[in-house]
Image 1 (tube, rainbow, N blue to C red):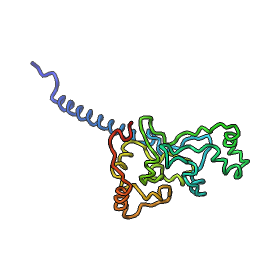
Image 2 (tube, one colour; image 1 turned 30 degrees about the horizontal axis):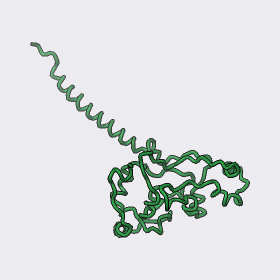
Image 3 (tube, rainbow, N blue to C red; image 1 turned 180 degrees about the horizontal axis):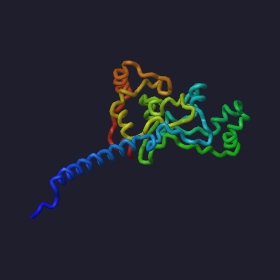
Image 4 (cartoon, rainbow, N blue to C red; image 1 turned 60 degrees about the horizontal axis):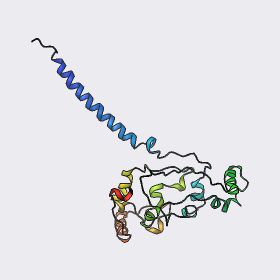
Length: 216
């Protein structure tokens, strides 16, 4: 029987297979990078809020402690969103007539809460407890970044599972003394690993990586 395909068809076939493998690998790599990109994770993206509250001004410039507004961070799973009354503790005297703060005054006057947009919004199937992490020596800035340098609040990290697991697997790299948890300008010492190992033992920190730790 006469040969139907020329010998060069073998080269074309092999080349096509290689090209297909490269294409699929490139597509997989692209999707992997996309899933970790700010576009998907919304990291580094400022959310539009009813009032453009500046953490840089309040926490950085004025030195307001995190716990003044986020009152439940040491005793509950949620850090808490401050009620308008907390804002008015100061703004009934400071900038009390500013048009910029009319939304705040109206909220207080009408007893209608401001509808803030959550920045660090974990999926419903993820359980996170602020009080536990605070007690174990995890600083606010470790997860939220230097909020005292943020004119407008944004999500500093991806909040993806691999990001959480990095800390859960190696807590000695991240824990700090409890009395510095709310210190924004805290710098890990040169002997962080040595200090971290001591704190891991002292604070009874376990390397919890089982699914049920966060997915309940």
